[in-house]
View (cartoon, rainbow over the protein chains, first blue to last red):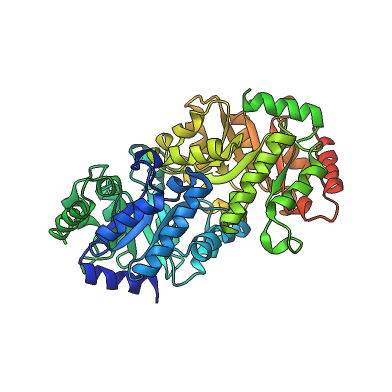
Length: 258
Length: 258
């Protein structure tokens, strides 16, 4: 099954565009609990309310070998207990051909993720090893959610912002399993990218803790069927005292504008 | 001790600008040997001929948890047996502030590397968590060695190539522990960046397997003292039947043009 099919099924089943970011920062965990145990609680509480889970590799790497075991165990648990929910490994990888192949192996074969985030800046030969996994989604980072993202991403190339120029070029490659990353803090950029990629699956972050306006960003990001996008929230759900209610609230709020 | 001091000491001691890339692709290892054991042999054979070692994280990640144990063991071995040789973790990381902090923790605190490679494209707030480790070198990927690197890196912004525009902006921040990455396959770009950063430490890759012309790239990359740059070679040294001789040859060839 392709990522797109899996994603369309779960969006229908759970009536949700909420992606929960599994970012278990060690310092914030209740004493003695592993990252995996923490994630398991979040997953058990939210799996029927989400369209995807997105572990960010950084939080596991910072916890050393043990952290990476938690990442591996989290993905294995999801695939066993909730195989219908897609897993996006937010790893923001990118390297030259030979090495990019190793990163693709790690994301898709070692960890078994359904999608991965990648940098576009090294060019097509650096992305092909990811694209070659045709059932996986390769989510390219075009426009990020952070305050300083415009410094380089919005530099003007022939009167067009750099991030959009990069997107136009990649569009011309005609890739079947391309995903599009846009920060939820930039609704105009979201709209530009949705206009360019009407049918692609989008991933957006920053709708929770980073406080983006929900109505505006949902309307800019959804496809013509009111779907086609994952809105990721991490801290605002996983560190809420009641993650289930927090996920449900965000889901319902997003659904108002679809 | 700052990275710069450590680097200047080893360049003098070993009379070398050769960085050996510890990229032990599992499929190419002799049967039954771990990545760590393989690296140990390479290190034992070359440690007095190099100015740095550069493990690329991808090759370890592709080997799963066991691979990351080999990465950890390799760095620990170097720090114990050859503490005078700097270790560059080639991880090509980059994420927004909170998460970038986790990647910096992983590179510098968990693994204990002396330097790390990072993407600039998310902007200053994504780089600050790395720069804040003032004794570590933060090597920013400006221009990569692969054939397609020009597609995005050489887009024109106000008549200047994008990679150089990014470099000019970062130069203006006045960062003390900034390193500069340029592929050895692009001598003109190397020269542009050396002109912009006369005193910074450079890292360059592709001088071995990727077949760049040595004289041209050495002359373009060295600083006014004939130093200030690491030329990385991986496969052409570590998979040679005699890594010591291969490293020595490359060192001497580079030294001819310093």
